[in-house]
Length: 92
Image 1: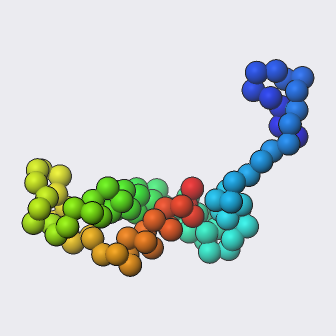
Image 2: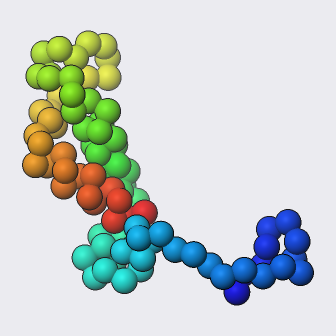
């Protein structure tokens, strides 16, 4: 059992969330996690794309985007958006 952060004499059972268990036990999530562990550039690219989709999915077509940070490629696709979020969760 892990030691308490504030009092080393106290030990408590470790609790894992469903997402934690998925990354530990689910072979699909493990495969994704291991891929990103080995290739940090692939992780960074996937994270940036998923974050962009998450924050822009309700803004409509790319023509409505303004500013210097508009991506050149079309990323707003509902099916790919859900898949990117799932991958983001699994790779934690």
